[in-house]
Image 1 (cartoon, rainbow, N blue to C red):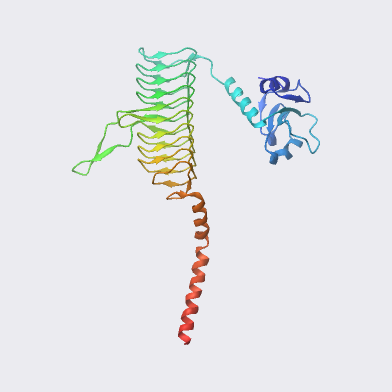
Image 2 (image 1 turned 45 degrees about the vertical axis):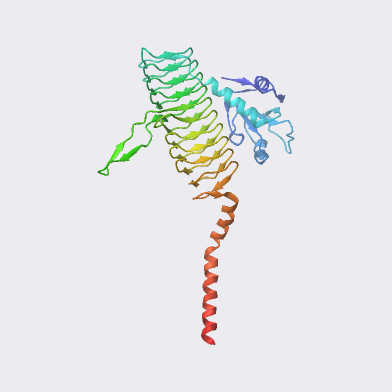
Length: 347
């Protein structure tokens, strides 16, 4: 699909500087631009690329003033915020890629299930009994939806994802390929023989509206009650969230994070990759946790922590400087000991 510079400017409320009729049919980084591509420049450190890019159209800030000659084939669209406008266009482009509403062959929908309007159900997907699927939902091929599940309007579930029984997924959520929502929590109790006896997990998982779950991430069902991912939370790929965990509103966590059971994570928390959290903790609002941190205790609001075990990030950096100097300190200490021994021997 092709769009002219004039059409794009109309979508993002921009001003065309160049040929308004030039057309683009793809998106590209400014340093990888080709003829017919749309790019953007927001970060000044990439400015050098605009003077040699092959892209046909580039979105720039209104404040941008070229310090060199631009390619004759390049048309600019000037806006207040180039980054935000390009993100808006990406979202628009993404909507054009949506599957047309239909139910493909071999998809199974239980006779007691209820499905809304304008839905897409891909081949070999399964929707269990008493499940309710809202309007404008896309369920891609090979997805398994268990019984008594509720899925809100506008949600997308990508190929190979699994949603177990009784789980609730809100509106406009995205569940990526391979994710598992509602598998049993890790609950076992040793008996008198020392053998592990499974504790039934009878709760569910609730994803509130606008939650994203990354590929191959797992959200365990609660032992009783619910594991809850609050509105707007963003979960990266390969994340493990244990039973009865609560993740707060607009909290984001990067890949390979693991949160043990019954931990409560606050609102607007930022969690780096490979962070591990022990169970039954309380992490406050607006906390920032650096990558590979090990969190073994409660964390107060607005804290910034790193390390394993994690503590205040400023203190950690100071401690790390000392740790890096430790070999030199030990060497100087050894020299000092040798000098003292020699002086003592000479007396």
